Length: 595
Image 1 (cartoon, one colour):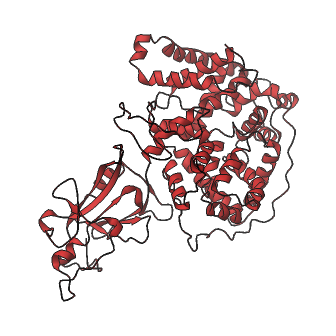
Image 2 (cartoon, rainbow, N blue to C red):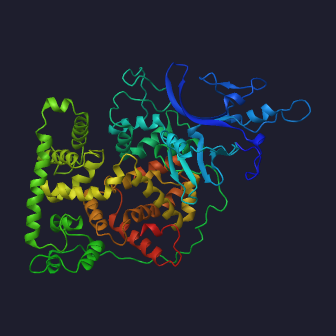
Image 3 (tube, helix red, strand yellow):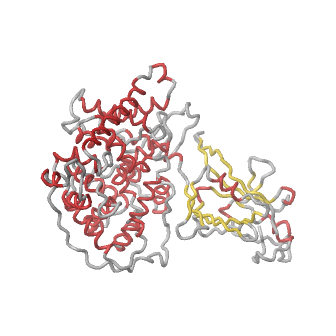
């Protein structure tokens, strides 16, 4: 630490040498349960440490003493005449804090590499740490084991810090059961995991076997229900806004939630988007129109016009089995009929080779393949509750369910790394319903998953990116509404998570899902129509939300109750109008990347 503010002129006696490390500490509760948390500590070198005169907190390592960061106020210790004792001058800089309290890290490389830690509690100011002998990269790599570091879009030298609440992440396993929307309390010591967690609203569950991130991601299909009940609590007690924001930030790592008002934050807010144009929807593409877009050899011609017709009106149902294969890229638009027959033969052979791989696994082999067992178990569980009210999947021993199961199991052979994550059955179900063919449904599903893959990956990067983009888009479109949501700790639109994760599959009726998806697959009017659809829905609901003065809980509940009550044609009409309104604006700020 340079105790002199002039970094370019450092005297030797003003350098405070020390070391910094991240420590995983075990915390015990009065009930003898325990949890772990990561703590960052900085202390001066042992040979320079004073041995008396300070009130310290003793670490589990005898040579390591520190001052708690909560009381870090650069205290002045006098030696009788007002002057600082030299050893006290050195020791007053020691600090420790929980990694979960860390907001940002500023990394600078000048004469020396340095790190500056900014905590969520802005009343605490920490000194800049200078690495005279290197080690910045090694330290940050160590920190990444317990926190996610992402570059700030405003300042490339600033790293945003987010931590995963282990208890919260692990507890999402209970969301996989349809009837479990409330709190889970485990009243036994969990011998398998060797520890139990105590707490009012979240506890570790024994049957969590898969990776917590994967299980958490699966549970997000019911995240709005869960959060509503969790924050409501047994006695309807309201959590402080800061605590609710912290908890939501931990649910989705990598997203920072503002706890305080920031002057100048509304930098993009004064853009005049102009009048929103009126938009009319069209009629579905007819068989006659489809036939008119094919040459004698079967090639599809005038594709841009064809996509425009589909975007404006969708497809009549009898065409979906054929046209969806083109929209999803299973068949090239310029392929001939004979070429498509050859593709089908090759893809059929490839599919059944992969299917044979898991079909031929013996019981003895499966006992030694935990990932295959876990995938099979989760698939069987999800298949038995996917669209069971649809005639294609209803009833016992329905052949549609068998195909759904077999396609998902085969996909695990196609993509070993991803395997199966809950929510994927929701994406496959409409495809199989339309194709009525195992092989065609599989390859269309593969193409659809190529678009959706990041939504289901362990780091959930696709979901984080979409939520950030959606928040920026809504802030541009309707600042007043966005500010209202922000005031209710809802500015990052976490209640839209399920919408984005499975593309409104559980928000719309089955026919409306088919219409929305085929419209989105045209890539018109932009590649992120689903974000405009979110804005369209919120635009229709904002008046009720604001007039009723809905708070955090009520917003979550209201959005969740929109399921099966939405008009897809009205949503698409407004989404297109919003897009045209933005494209017609001369000043495009923060949403350029959406198009």
